Image (cartoon, rainbow over all chains, first blue to last red; front, top):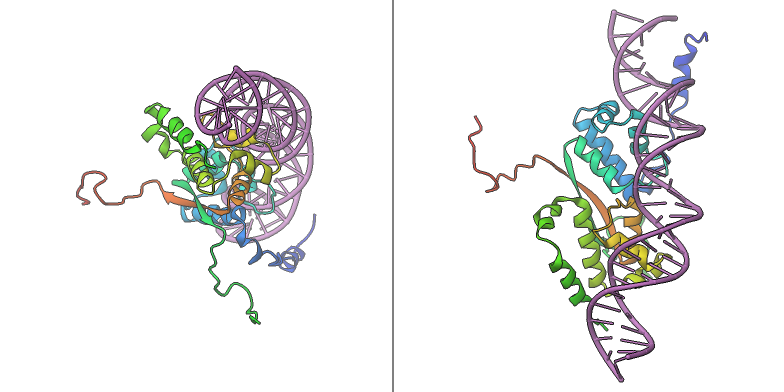
Length: 111
Length: 111
DNA sequence: TGAACAGTTATCATATTTGATAACTATCAG
DNA sequence: CTGATAGTTATCAAATATGATAACTGTTCA
């Protein structure tokens, strides 16, 4: 119970490693969560406020936004979230063999 | 080889009541299914072929594509379907009050 | 007519998401 | 420190999507 300056010490000691960086940016699920968070903050809303609009709880909003959760949300859930922050959604399909071929990895010598 | 899938498609499309014409085109779920069907046929695949790739059954593919079903598919399901026909997906967010400013409504003086 | 093909629909079991609650960390301000 | 705010995580029950099977319609072709 008694933690005076120790608390401040610990909070800095344990910071999140930047493990997931470029990797998951390819995953639509990951990209989605980043967008959700960005748009919500841009709208100046808290998770709790969104939860209220959607008649649910903030913990559920957190789960939706958080990449740690391994859930794949329903389309309607994404839709509702988007609606709460004032957006419509659209699902775009882009051909897989779209070679952007541009500075994706380190260069490899073509032999 | 293209027996009459196109014919069938058209028949279905045209037999839809006019009610869900302009209406549901606003629904992402509806737009999605239309895209799924269109892209699959463009890829020259049958529901059964897609089912095979995804290790499932054609009835499930039908359910996914068919607007009659009131299900809201998971993001991962859409992803897998897209993958089977050679596409990646991306979810786009567009502001609800998107003033395209272009002949949508009458102009009003912004004072 | 009949067989093969493509898609639909119904049903059930299983898997997964979602909702609700509660406890927790962390930050900020008095 | 205390309280308030924002977000996270765990857990369980309830809701819903998905998988599998089977029966069905409609089309095409011989």
